[in-house]
Length: 343
Image (cartoon, rainbow, N blue to C red; front, side, top):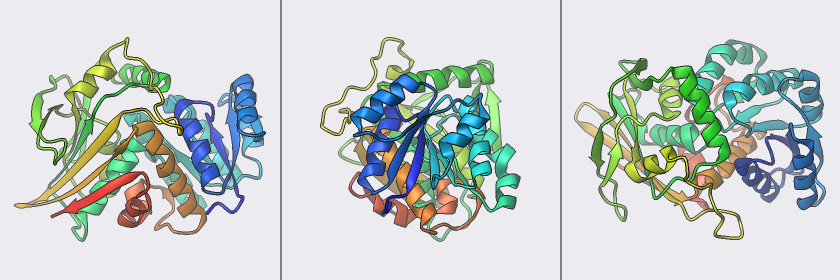
């Protein structure tokens, strides 16, 4: 448990940030609220019983240093991460504290591995990007499914979302990613990221019950194509998205998530089906739950708890499946996620 340790949440007043703040409090941590909008921070601090608010901007390193002073760790919830990740990681390295973020942006996560791996390892620091529904969750599931395999031929991550009401942050991050790709698409094949102009195909994915087979967009690439091959020897990683959810995301008039329970979760449900194949063999991990943004909070906070209690396997920049005991981590999420391993 948190035992009163302070954890800075950068982007605390955002949709996901609020879930992270609540989860930290539930786990016994003391959240410190940070972000660039002092007014929104003050409002959130008042609603949370007077938590400390420390305004900071990624363009002002000194303000980030003040925000992180005396904290045990920082969780970055402020997208687009192409803009925020590097400055907050730099501040965490200066402060000598672990950094965790919830970035779903493929290129931003590549940047983190590329630019900070050597420095973080040399400093004995811990930097965990994509510790969220996209990226970290799929990586944990793929790692758990691999079991004692050291290599596999391919990994497939199929997202069965009942709907997808994107937040403003999701939309803003999507715009940045689109600009960086110059209209191209991206996939992980032949052991590397490939940018291309191929049309995306619609196919049927055999989700297990009760969802059952559904139409999905093939190669609907998410952050898993960065996190999984960062430590697993798998030359082909593909991700898929249910057609309905993909349409919701692409429609400009799809509203933001609406709460349906006292915790603020939306009615959205998800089923993530991960399949790894080697030769003629296949292993599978299936997880289900409610609200992809809400479930990101226990993922990020469980990561911080494990880092601060020494339950890690490496230092430097590392994805969830590399730095944590994947199966143990997933089982710790049992209040929020149902898990099944099949082989």
